[in-house]
Length: 250
Ligand code: UDP
Image (cartoon, rainbow, N blue to C red; front, side, top):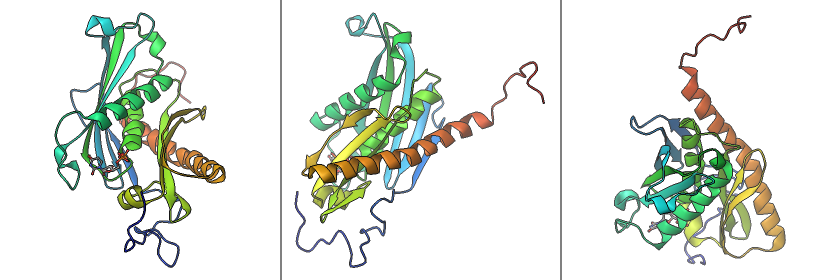
């Protein structure tokens, strides 16, 4: 990493390139039930990111040797569309998407009650339609809502955010230029109630103090993001009619 000499990432008033303060998130919008054939689906808009998630299952795991007799296997597949970035991305899987699929699958497995569905798989298809930094975290945060929208039991929601270092300052939710030219990039995700860390990656360098500050910024932000997740699910169920439960009337 390293900043090209003509690229100022923080202006003279201490504002970031897009006008945000250090702990300010980009706008986040989560819409559920955007695909008819999926058991659960979400459109995640996070800053300039646009990501579609479709969840299917639990269904019998196939091929059979992938079955786990004790629990469901979560198979997340992260894919970036060729047109999602400035410089056309070569279509198909590559090392980056394989790695991201793996870390997302593992993070989701910590939140889903996989032990209730032995021998099954839960497919999570993630299509990045427009990428603008932080896609792995936005995908994971969206996938958690899509799984809940599919009615799959979960012990907690996964919520994440990237944090990093730009011109010596710790800033939340890196933009594309901050991600490319900053001094550190740390995507992180936690279980929203339990506050267990389920994804943590890093490139660049931070002192231990900076690292502590970065993680507490993510923990604070995770509460704001979890609320957006909850609101998306409340919105989904609001319009639906449920049978009257006897004695429930006031
Ligand atoms: N990116 C790109 N081409 C690629 C991969 C990534 O232009 O082949 C961009 C994209 O905007 C992505 C950003 O670089 O969001 C940062 O990528 P990174 O690997 O750090 O993952 P992310 O931050 O999206 O989780």
